[in-house]
Image 1 (cartoon, rainbow, N blue to C red):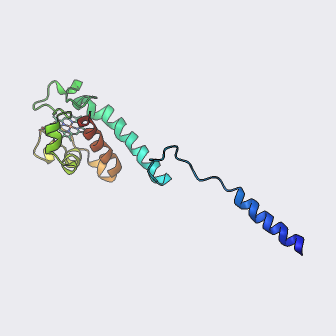
Image 2 (image 1 turned 120 degrees about the vertical axis):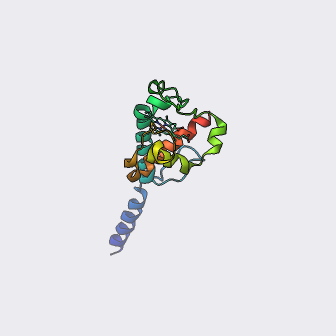
Image 3 (image 1 turned 180 degrees about the horizontal axis):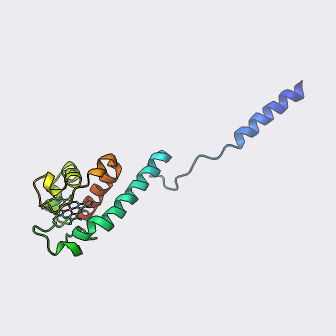
Length: 138
Ligand code: HEC
């Protein structure tokens, strides 16, 4: 009986010791984000980046200055996203709305196409807004 108890205790102790160590983030400043959410965000940011590079950059330029290859014949031209005065003049909601509805939906140039499908992908929409904002931080 004593041996039985002892082995149970040992087994329990071993079980504890075999638990994987807590994930170390490597940086003391790392945010305590939960895994799945983090992965989802990374995925949609990638989607947003890919979308900007393949769609938006044709007009807005990969550097955000509004000088993409398709911008040459546009009037008005897409604005320069690196302009701090413009960055300060619009809210994230303004940007979201223009990207969703297109220029026509917000009284801007109809050459700015809408992306109504992003209504169901708010993470991608936010990713695009962050990309646009990112040009102003350089
Ligand atoms: C066919 C060219 C074209 C494409 C493609 C395009 N845009 Fe635009 N975009 C424009 C033009 C032109 C304007 C300026 C409209 C105006 O000022 O009247 C504009 C304006 C905007 C604005 C509003 C800026 C402001 O003045 O407040 C945002 C935000 C924007 N685009 C984001 C995007 C994103 C994100 C994409 C890709 C999903 C994209 N655009 C794709 C041409 C384009």
